[in-house]
Amino acid sequence: MIALLFGVMYFMMIRPQQKRRREAEQMQSALAPGDEVVTIGGLYGTVTGVDDDTVLLEVAPGVQTRYARPAIARVVTQAPRAESTEAITEDAEPVKE
Image (cartoon, rainbow, N blue to C red):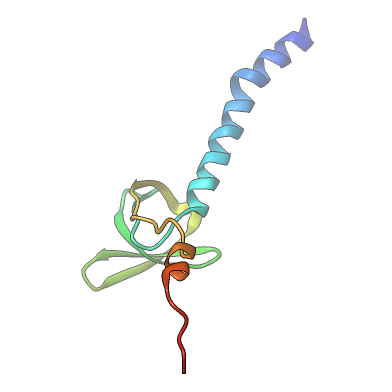
């Protein structure tokens, strides 16, 4: 009976929490310049730079602040991403000198 209780507790509480944490880490690792985000404090801003541990946000024209990646709660809108740079380089002709 106790094992069944622990099994139910695992599937109802622990597993969903791990899934939410993985999704948050994936969202934070996919941040790129141009994304509009909300911090855990409720501050809206646009990502202007990304480092390993920090994100640079523009919160007003000309005002940039630095936040830790885990401080980003959600992405409001994503900036358009280039599909692939290979398609651009394949169409270019080689330069002859």
